[in-house]
Length: 120
Image (tube, rainbow, N blue to C red; front, side, top):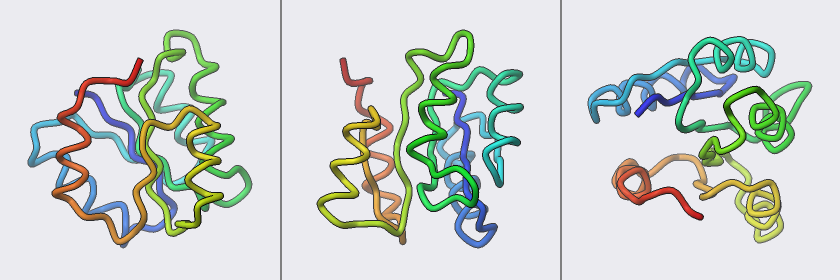
């Protein structure tokens, strides 16, 4: 699967990229929204793992921007964030994220989520 990881923290992003690569996915990393949009246009990912607490544009808004790009209307999205309240989970559902995973990420949970088919 082609996966776009968007996280402004290298300490959080790098282990995630390594994990996804070991799982056999083709992974691209962006550290901010504008870089994510450029990569998504060229790369056409199947899945985006988005940090919600990004500077300038939060991950919920970025998800909508990504899905607005040509060919990405059905992009699967997973929130990867430090925000873990019930309201945060609801905002992710409202923004059409399939899952909301709170940092630090449990990689076994992430692997299980990635094995599930896309939600209809």
